[in-house]
Image 1 (cartoon, helix red, strand yellow):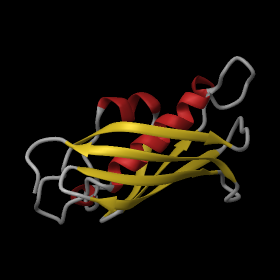
Image 2 (image 1 turned 135 degrees about the vertical axis):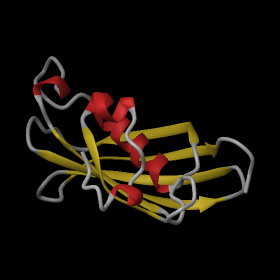
Image 3 (image 1 turned 45 degrees about the vertical axis):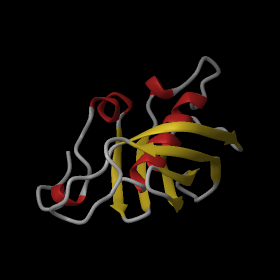
Length: 138
């Protein structure tokens, strides 16, 4: 649960975020970062973080980095059109962080890239996403 004073600065909670168990660390114009404490529910049969968790974190961070709006305005909504994911390192425990940056933006489409890092700032996975805003263009 976020601190009440920070609530206007963070996106609203949703079911998927609660299910996966990640939290938003920062959210601003063109950037977002989220973190996850790895638990046994996040591991695959080999005992390492499931690739789907990496992909979900990359997707969520990329979505957030393009939907921020100034305080008092409603955040935009988006859907992912494509997501590429590359895995570089395995991990089984600890805290990981996904950091995303919006690379380009049009009226309806934006592109973002993200990295997942461990506590020692080692690269675990990275990806690129193409996302489309939902609703009327601004």
